[in-house]
Image (tube, rainbow, N blue to C red):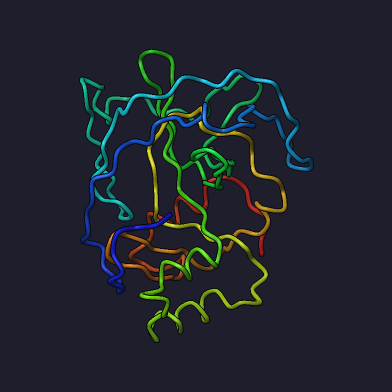
Length: 232
């Protein structure tokens, strides 16, 4: 979840171009698509790993409200893709608002919330993943040469104290990629340990933890409210 700049401070006017992540399924040794329920751990299911995905969209506005997906190589314009609320995998379905485990690359997985699903004309689907961060990941992004500036240290300690009851926080970091990068639904203990009072704003040049009810992040509040949560 590394970004490019160590300049810190709240701003919504920073833009970067990020490619749609290719499907790294073949590099994940246990990339079976797992079926889970809210009360159980993932149940391994044997599944053939899908081929790598094409880069279909570039996004302008990493970490800010407007992703502005731009099609490449003749892909259909983003706004013309049909919005859907779910998409089928081999043994389970993903749904809008699900928190899922995602295969990023070999031996590297993370959790993300599905904030948008769109259907391609060829029967595949693309999703927008809104990434969850752990405290140590936020702390690492706050650091400059191993030191956290005083303003950001106060922000971290206030919004995410070391003894907090939650373990994950929704971020403004989003990715557009194919739907079959989802490995499984997140287990209940992950879903129930998501913060509901704050969100982490992270762009290539600014990083800060804000109240989820901040007027400037109404768009993130809508993403937060997707799906059903147990309150922490």
